Picture 1 (cartoon, helix red, strand yellow):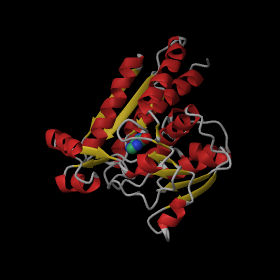
Picture 2 (cartoon, protein in one colour; picture 1 turned 90 degrees about the vertical axis):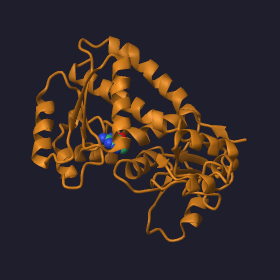
Picture 3 (cartoon, rainbow, N blue to C red; picture 1 turned 30 degrees about the vertical axis):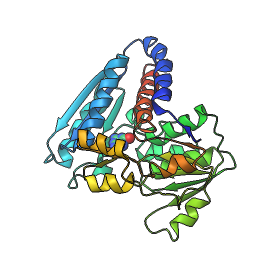
Length: 302
Ligand code: GUN
C-alpha cells in the first residue's frame, strides 16, 4: 500500500512553527498580492493566500486590476509596494495577461521583497546555493519529502515540466540535495523510458492524469504538482475508469480536480505519492507564508 504524503498535515505543522516567530516581530509581516485579470484559478489561489494571511495575523493587501492593465501601470504598482515600509513581500500572481511583459514586472520587484523567489537575483542565488527566498511550490515539495523521511541523496529524480515556477527550481533544489536530476519536457524522446528510471517522479506539466502506469516505476515516490480542473464528464469517466463514487462526486459538483499523474495508477504503483487535492497544493501557501516571515524578520533585523 502506497504511503499518502499529506500536504495539509505538513502545511499545518509549518504554519504552527511560524506563529511564535510572527508574534516575536515588532511589526506584523505584510504581504501584497497583485492579481491582474479574472482568471478563475488565479482568483481562487489569491483568495486562499489572503485568507491564510488573515489566519496568521499578517497585514495583507490584495490589489486587483483589470486584464487591460498595461505593463507601465503594473510597474508603477510594484514601485509603490517596493517603497511601502509596511510591506515585506510582493507577489504578482502568474500567469499575467499576454500583453504584459511579465519578466519586466518580476525584475522590478525588490529582491528582498520577492517572496516567490522569481527575481533573476534570487534565481541566481538558488542556482549557486546562496541563501534567499526559494520558489514556494518546489520548496514545499522538499519540505514534504523531508517530513516523511524520504532521503533524495543519490536517488534518480525525474521532473516532467521545465517551467520557471516549478520545473527548473525543483531541479535545482533536488540537485542541491544530491539527487541525480533529469528534466523532461514536451520534446523529450521516449518520455516513458526516462520516467521509468525515476526513484522520485515529479509531475509538473499541467496536463490532466498525463503520467500513467507506463511512466511510473513500481516503488517510486510520485510527487504531483499539477492542479487541473475537469469540467467534461467524459474526461472523468476515462480517467477514473467509470468509478461510480468519483462520477457521483463530479455530477454533484460539475467539476473535479486531477493532477498530472494518474489518480489510480500512482497510488497503485508508488511507494509514496501526493494526492490532488491535498498533496503539494497546501504547501505552496505555507511556504509563501514562510518566505514572508523570513523577509519580514530580515527587514526588521530580528
Ligand atoms: N501561479 C501559479 N503558482 C504561482 C506562484 O507560486 N506564484 C505566483 N506569483 N504565481 C503563481
